[in-house]
Amino acid sequence: MTTTFFDEASAQSEIKSLLVSKYFWAWAKIMINSQKRYRPNEDRIAYIDLFAGPGRYKSGASSTPLLILQQAIADHDMSQRLIAVFNDKDEDNVRSLQNAIENLPGIENLKHQPIIWNFEVGEDIAETFERMNLVPTLFFVDPWGYKGLSLRLINAVVKDFGCDCIFFFNYNRINMGLNNEFITDHINALFGANRADRLRADLDKMNPSQRENAIVNEICVALKEMGREYVLPFCFKSSDGKRTSHHLIFVSKHVRGYEIMKGIMASHSSTVEQGVASFDFNPVSSIQFRLLFDLSQPLDELADALLEQFAGQTLTMKEIYDRHQVDTPYISSNYKDALNKLEDKNLIVCDPPASNRRFQSGKRTFADHVKVTFPPKRLRRE
Figure 1 (spheres, rainbow, N blue to C red):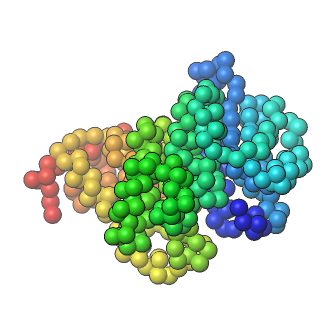
Figure 2 (figure 1 turned 135 degrees about the vertical axis):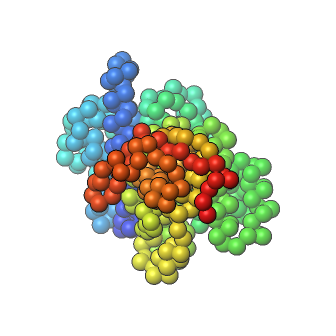
Figure 3 (figure 1 turned 90 degrees about the vertical axis):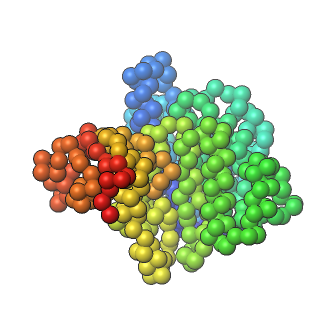
C-alpha cells in the first residue's frame, strides 16, 4: 500500500464509505428484524472488513470501520448484536485502528467489543471461511491492488444466510496486470484461469471503453456462475475525471439487498438523465462528460424495452419491475415514469387508468398494483 493512501479522505473514498455504511445500516436493520420475527434464538450479526486500514485518515476523517461502529453504538439493537472484525496485514495500521476504536465515544456500550486481526489475506482465510457456518455477515473487501481478492474468497463469504459482500475492484491495476506474467496467479484467482485466458486473448482487439466493459462484465458473470445472482458494480473515475480508477462491486444472493444497494448507488451517482442514474462517481464536473450523457435517452430506451419484452401481456407494475430490473440501471421510480409516458402516448392500457390516479409532488402516481396491458407487436403504434 502506498504511504499516502490514508493521508487524506478523497472524494472517491468518502463516497465509497457512504455506500458501504448506508448499506450496512439498511442490511443490519433487515437482519435484526428477521431474527426477531423468525429466528428468535439468533442474536448476532457481523461486519467483517478484511483490509481495514488505520481507522482514520491523517486529516482526522473517519474511514469505513469507524463509521460502521458509530452506527452500531447509536442503535441499541445493533449495539447488542454486532460482532465487528477488522483485519489489516500492516502492524502500524492495526495499532492506529485499535487506538481509534478505543477512543470512540460509547465504544464500551457494545456487547461484543471489536476484534482486530493482523493477517495477510490469502487462500488460508478463504479456506477458513469455507469451513465456517457464518451468522448474517456483511463483508467489505477493500484491497489496494488485487492480491488476496479471489472468486474463492467471495464465494466463501457469501455462502450462508444473510451474507453479502462489497469488494473493491481495482480496475486500473487489474487492466494493466492482465498480461503481466509475474501476477498470473493473482489474476487467475480473481477471474478463474479459463476466463482470464479468454480476456487476455481478446483485449488487444478492443478500444478502452470496450476493454473496461469486458473486464467488469467477466467478473460479474463469474460471480453469477457461482450462484451469486445479484451483482452490482459502481464505477469511480480518477481524480482528474478522465479515466476509470476502480469499481465497487456488490454481491448478494437476495434481490432485496440488490434493490437497496441499487437505490443507494443511484442516489450517489454523479449524473442523472431522465431520472436514470449513471452508477458512477466522477469527482470532476466535466462538461464534456455531461454532454455525452445528455445524448442518451435512458428512460425512452426503457419504455421501448418494456414494449418489446412484454408485448401481448398483462402484468402489474411490480411484476414488470421484478422481471426486468436486474442487471439494468433502472430503479422502481424509473419504471413508473416510463409507464406513465407510454400511457400518455396510448401505447399501453392501465387499470386503473390515469384519470383515476392521483398526483403527488407534481407527478402522476403509478402504484405497484396497477395493471398494465401491452399491445401485441403487430398492433403497436409507431
